[in-house]
Every structure is written in C-alpha cells, then in structure tokens.
Amino acid sequence: MYVGESIRTSLEEVKGHPGRSLFTLIGVILGTLALVVVMSVLDGVQLAVWEGIEDLGFDGVLVMSKKEPTERTERAKAHLSRGLRVEDARWFEDADFIRATSPVGETRAVVTAGSVTRRVDIYGVGPAFAQIKNRKALAGRFISERDYLGSAPVCVIGFKLKEQLFGLEDAVGKQVNVGGRRLTVVGVGTKFNMEFVNDDDMRKETGGIYIPWTVYRDMFGRASAISYVLAKAIEPEKSIDAEDEASRIYKRAHNGIGDVRIDNVGKEILKERGEIVRVLRNWRIIFFAIAGVSLLIGGVGIFSVLKISISERLFEIGLRKSMGATNGEIFMQFLIEAVTLSVVGAVIGLAGGIALVKVIAGFFPAGLPVSMFGLSVASGFAVSIGLLAGLYPSVTASRLEPVEALRS
Image (cartoon, rainbow, N blue to C red; front, side, top):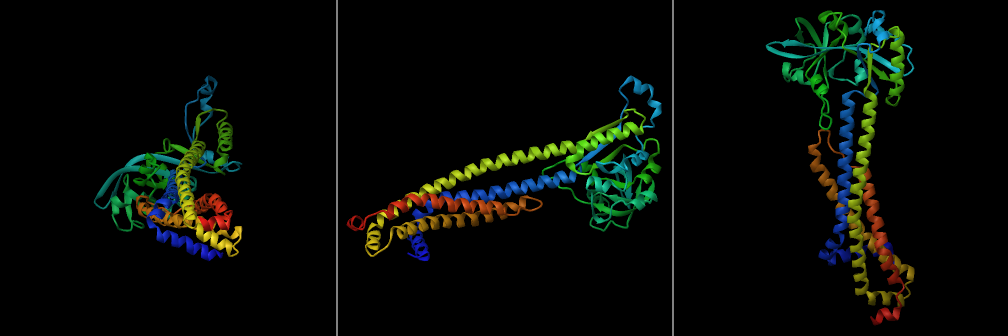
C-alpha cells in the first residue's frame, strides 16, 4: 500500500471519529504545546536576565577603592604611598590581564535645565569607562578621550533624567547647569533592562550625569575627587588573574603599602551566571519531564485507538492479504497511520503553542521569540511517540492469517 494511501486512510479515521480522535490526541497536543511555550518562556527569561546582567556592566570588572593599611608595619610606612590616584593608571599600560582602567568620582549636585531643577548623582569618568561598564549612548555619543584630555565642558545625561529635564525634546546639543557650571549635553544614556535584574546603581545612573573626570576634578576638588578606579579584565574568565595582577601592580606602585582594596565584582558575576544556567537547566528538565508524561499519555491513546481500529478492520486486513498484500505492507499501513495521528496532534499543539507564545510576548519588554529548539524537540518527540505507540499493533496486524481475519 502506498504511503499516501495510508496517510489518507488515517485522516479519514480522524474525520470519521472526531471525538475519539480528540481524546486520543489530547496528550500529544498538550505535550507539544507545553514544550513550545515553556522552552520559549525559559529562553526569553534567560535572554532578559543576560541583558540585565550585561547592563550591570560588571563582567570581568574590578573595583579598586581606598582603604587604610591593616598591618602595623604598613601603617608606620603609610607616608611612602600617596594613596589611590589617577596617575596609577600608567602602571597598568603593560598589564597582561587588564585591558583598560578608568577613574570614577561620585557625588551629588543640583542640575538645572530651563525651569526644571533636580538634585542628581554626578559621575566623573575617564574615556575607557564606557568600554569597561559596557555603556552606550541612546542618542549622541559618550565621553571621549578628547573630552577627558581637554577638560571639555560636556556631559552625558541618563535616560530618565533626560525625560525629566527635556521631556520629548532632543537633549543633544542643549545646555544644563551642573553645580554652577554650564555643560553641553553630547549624549543620552541607554535605558537599562531592569525587568529581571533590578539594581539601585543602574537606577541611579538612569537619573544621573556623566562628565569627564578632569572636569569633575576641577569642579569638586583634586584631593577627594577620585572615589574608585574601575579595571576591565581581558576576558571575564580571567578576572581572578586580573585581580592578582592588579594587587601586584598596586603593591609595587605604592611601595608595598596595602592601601587599595580590590573587589573582584567580575568573579561574582561569573559565579551568578553559572548559578542562573544551573537553575534554568533544572527547570528545563522538570518541564521536559512533565511534557514527556503528556506525550506518553498521548502515545497510550494512539496505541489504544490503533488496536480498536485493527479490530474494526479485520475483514479489510484479511481481504487485502488474500489478494496478495505482504506482511510488510500491512505493517507499514498501520505504522504510518499511527505516525500520522501523532503528527496531527503535534501540528495542533505546535500551532497552539506558537499562538500562546505570541499572546504572552507582550509581558516581555524585549519580546518573546518562539523557541526553534522547542519546536524541533516537540516535533521529534511527537513523531517518536507515534512510532513507538504504533509498533506493536502494526506487528500484530501484519501477522494475522487471512482466513482468521476474514472469519472474524
């Protein structure tokens, strides 16, 4: 019997017994639907979390701040070190595991634009700050090396502050008064993804202002201008090597005085990424198991319906075998019918899953793409279940004797 004829016979069975077919395929439908939806949601959550972590800007980052020497001998020789300074950056020029450093100064000041006044966070940064913290401008540009070296009176304002000061107007090229000094806006910061990674520092940055560190130093004092120094490892996985190297560099630069604290934030972020991957992997296993149970139930249904179908068509089987149909042809007929039933259920489930993903995509700020992996796995499972469920009934039908089948 041709494959096309077997498929046609299967579809006729589905059409002829719609109620029975629906209850038979409900497990396959729910299983495939669940796999598509769950895999899409988990992929969407993972993507949103990764974007949030990237927006934190701490991948491979070291934060180096001032601290008091703890050892008695170091305290006695504390005068030999001038403490944390921007000039220390020259010691990192030939570093093996650190590719960029930037001073950062933080304070609060009053910002005025037209009739609007706000008290916001001010960040004095170096030209490598954007590279280190993965910061980009939504409009205009970020602080450049030319701004830094020339102490240019420019600034980049946060996304939220731009809305407060200028509303829907274009802020680039406008001027703001920061702590009594007039600065030109050259860029607007991006809007961070804080749906799954809600961080106070990111919230502060969206409502703050970046200015060249040299301008910040002149405005708020040379002695206390620097709050901390940021350094970026050549790769996130090299953050521990970068930490050790930074410790050696500061020991040498500060004459052995341990007056700089090094916080390896990048190492913690790497650890958190691994933990998130583990949690999501466990959730995938759980939902795979649940969907697998639904598909197995669907397989039992297909098995039962195929047995019923064979018992109802014994005369047909006996007639075909008496006319020369081989065991292999009978076997393939019923196996193809089993797979066709499973594929029909899978198609309905996949269509429902895609539709449901489109509906819930509105709850994700970055959207929710349909998981191609989920589609392929669900389809593969459905076909496999059809094959396994139809194997035994097809073998049974193929081994029937023509005379016994006709008599039955």
